[in-house]
Image (cartoon, rainbow, N blue to C red; front, side, top):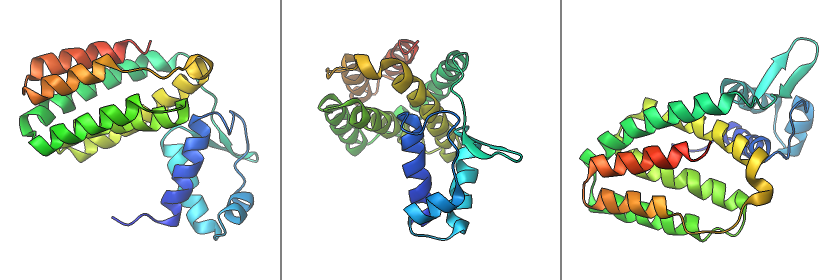
Length: 199
């Protein structure tokens, strides 16, 4: 599927919100965004609606569309949902695995370990989780997990950005090893423990 200008605007703005470059309360002005991306208001409106659907922005009567505040109580719910849904996806993914899938997961793991800063690491970490879950072949489930990843990423940036350091993720390595053995029980248990560490 070809990316549209609305996709590009949504991706750009969502990454800036997640990383805290666009802080809570910032007004997302359609005319400013249209000028920045050299486009009409139509794709901007579409991108803003998607930001609202993903909980990153809110349209307030007479105040326009603004970046939503980060709710510290939300992270517990997000983590519990990620545990349930990612374990479900991984269960089905392992059943469908090819060697190419295992190789892709290992490549994604290595790329994540080699990230030089938190912005790059967060994208690559999200990519790793997406790669290990994609073989489940459940697009609606994967789309819901993608939304949860965005919510998790905002909390990670807000709380860990100044403490981030480059490291080898042993959980990622263990998950890939379990996947290569087609050991669904071990892979799911490691993933469950890995996600709960975010708390």
